[in-house]
Image (cartoon, rainbow over all chains, first blue to last red; front, side, top):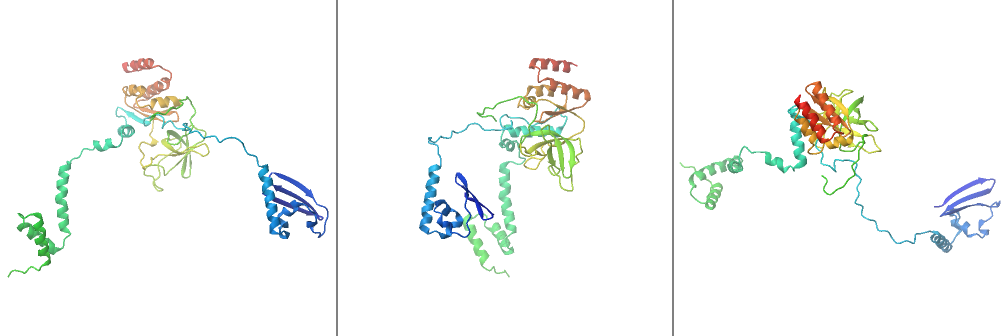
Length: 201
Length: 181
C-alpha cells in the first residue's frame, strides 16, 4: 500500500510514504523546475508520479528490488502445521434438544377438554412417529371393498366419456358377447365401431 | 432425545430467551402492530398481531395489556430483541395464544420447570389425582394454574413452589393429608 500525501507550501515538499512495513519523511531542498532525476536516489524513481521518465527495464529492476526487500522482511513461523482436532463440543442454548421435555400446557381430570386432546396429540408425536397416527385411523370401509368399488367405478365413469356411437356399441356387445373371452371381445368391438351398421328394415 | 449426548445441567433463576422455547409472557404494551411482552429476560419480547391462528389484518386478536400469552420464540439471540409467535410452523396454534381468565401466575426456578416437564414426572402425576385443574408451564420459570375454586388453586401453587425443596416422601405425606381432607 502506497499512500502519498503532498503538502505544497512555498515550494517545499514534505512527503510521507507508507510502503510495506516502514515509512519515513523526506524534506527536499527548494527547487524550481530542476529535474529531480539529478538526485541519484533509487527510491525517488519508485514514486508513482515519477514513472513517466523511466524505461521499462529500469522499472522491472526497481520492482524486483522492491519485492526482494519485502520478502526478506516478511516474518513467518518456522513451526510445523498444527492439525485441527475435531471438536465434539457443540454449543446449544436450549434444553429442548437434550432432554425429552413434554408440552407445557396440561389439563387434568377434564378441566379443559381441548387441552387434554392436545396433550395426547403432542405427546404421541414426541414419543412415537406419525406412523402410529395412521394405524389409529380405523377405516369404515375395508380395503377389499374399496378395491371392488373402484373397479366398477372406473368402468362406469369411463363409459360416460365415450362417444355416443361407442356407448351404444358397447351396450350391444356386452349383451351379446358375455360368454366369449376377453381377446375376442375386443375385435368384434373394433370392427363394429369402424363399420357402418346397416339399419334393419 | 439424549442419545449419547452429555450436557451440563445448572440451576438458575434468571431466564435467557432461547429459540424454540415455549414461555408465558405478560403483555406490557401495544405499539401499533406489535405487542411488547415481558418474558423475564433482559429485554421485552415482541409479538406481532398476525402471529396468531386465524389472524388477518382485519381480524385482529383480542389482546389487552396485562393478558397472559403462551408462545414460542422464533428469534432469540444476544444481538437482537427476542421475537415470539403464537403459531407453529404449520400455522396452527396448537395450544399457544392467550391464556384465559382467572388462574394464578407465579414464578419458580428454571430447574424445577425442567423437572416438571420431564416425561414421567411424579409430582405432576400425583397432583393430577387430587382435583381437576389446568396447568401451563413456561420455560422462563413461570407457571399458571387454574382450578375450580380459589382454595384449590392456591393449594396447587403452594405444593409446586414447595416441592423444589421437599423430598419425595415429604411430598407424598403432604398430598396424603390434602386428599384426606
